[in-house]
Image (cartoon, rainbow, N blue to C red; front, side, top):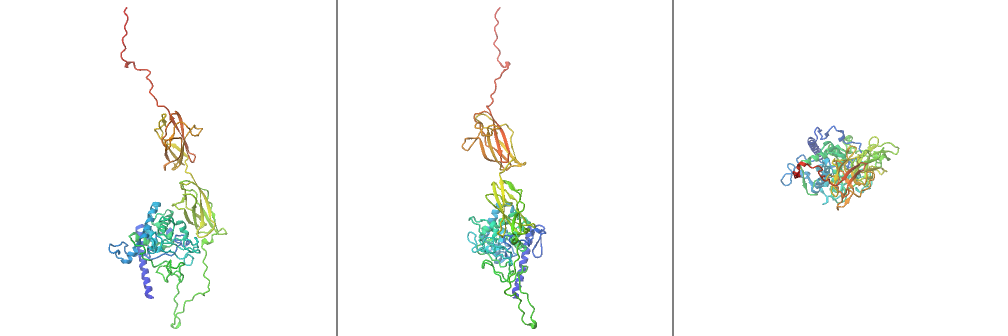
Length: 597
């Protein structure tokens, strides 16, 4: 036993050294001014990157579920050219550095998708690999089918508050098979309430399956890129990782693997990856097995140095006379279990609107008003630190900042959660935003929102030349206009153009100038025209029939902007005869004979 304990100490010391070295390297390469203490913990002086011990477990992707704490080897992960081994690491190092082929492909495809969808996030696939390593050992060493689905479900322990967070069932067991408590699901370990909005279809099969590595990796990428975080910035990177699992130890473990994979990795066959051995919940609940046998490693007695410790018998002094030690006292078998204290979420009795004003915005613009929701007890007392989920529903392309249709916000000390700003899409009409308490089946609050058509309040010509044409000809100068709204360019604004009868009679004129349709037929009203991003629009070419005179072209936009343009159709001017020719230019006159006298 003493030898075994000694091995644990040596292993703990080695892995702590790995963590310190890896985090130090990452800090030096990415975060100027960040220091690392002798235990490998980052000291940034930034309170926002530290975990919040008062945050509910469901305020994370995983519900703060247990994770693997194995750390990468200290040697370089770059494989050597000989026999697939790794320089200075041996077979174990090569296996640690390798990532199963399908799993690696899923990470890289997720990175490529996010590079297109959210280029400002700068998500590296190595971060997904680091999280996948810590959450599931790369889908249990790549034990996945050809389409990326895990051969058997990967479930964390039930989050029943007994050594873990307390998250009661939110999916009726649809994802985790547990209708009483939630469990983290799949290779990236999403809890059902988070997967419900964060889930993505990464392999194009029309399904969002948390047990599929392509779906889970893409969902993890979107999750890490919300809130407009830039993961090339160390501060945002730490925030994103802590939002996945609210633990400083988790942060440092992920950063260690991130740095390791950044130095190099290689593809290995599916199913051949090494399986992690140590979990963050080792020894937390002695004698308690996970709720889904065979899906997660059972807790083992003892822990690695520096990890949370569970309840252990306290060694007792020898009995008088040197006899055997007295056994530790245990509670009577009929002692009722301790009552789990209610979480803030449990105390919420209702949700109320916290004074949200009318929600209206023009297409393509940000809503000036933000949604505010208040969580209260049945007695009307504010409840802080409750997770409120805001979901956009209806036929709309409006999103929250960052491009998501769902946002989750924790209530402040006054019980109020303020949703991120809404960004109106191009689809006009009415939609709704639903506010609900995560983890509770309470009646939510619905907010009506309206997107109006893009508008302009001013419309002016961009050219100054007179618009003239001869009968039966075409106008040489096109009609160009520019639309503005409150002094700014009004882009993508719909413009209608009609050749009207008179300034007072705005009905369509049946004579004079005209446009041509696709078939070359004359039309005198155009709709569906839109200004460009700078608010500019050049109308199609105008033609004239045989009618002469002055005609009017009227242009209008949503928002009340209007412009009337004058068009003239007149015959071409011909040179007038010379009324007074120069006599000097004529030939000499014929002499007149004088009669004889």
